[in-house]
Image (cartoon, rainbow, N blue to C red; front, side):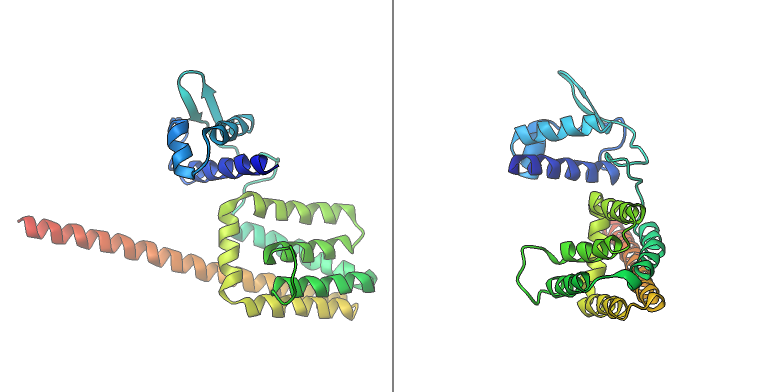
Length: 248
């Protein structure tokens, strides 16, 4: 099982390099030995990762030649669309706000107690085998399950699948969630309070407020990233200019 997790992890790392343009379509991947050294794993793990990526249609393995990158599809290996953080958060805001509103009148005391426990786990206030992100996911999925609507449960579960399949999305969400943990606790508590009161309107509003704040945080993070990119480019240009001036 551990070996299976390892080659999945390696496959995701290779996909990151492909999707970021390090290995564009048509290019040949480095050899197994080089990739094994790069990722700190065995050549067997690299070989299994490449076979998995070939099955997903992302690589073509040519015997005696190597592994070549194919054009990526608009969908992941599990048939989920590839989306950006803004698209995903916007969709979650729409679906999960209505999910909370639908769940509010029928949610059970047992489910309320479970949501309370998950917030405690999320904030590290009680010991658990779950990570904060896992508790966050389970909190939202528990609300979806409280609707007793299989279609809603499937859609919201699929959106979490989109988030988990793309490591870049996970990185963006984590940076936003970890920047100010107090927001995370307060927003989830507001959702829970509305559900406790069996208030559909308040539950919808609290869930929307949670995602609105996330979208605003994503905008700020994007602006900061753009600023860093411009600053780096300016610094590189200045260095080239100074070097050129010294040579003259």
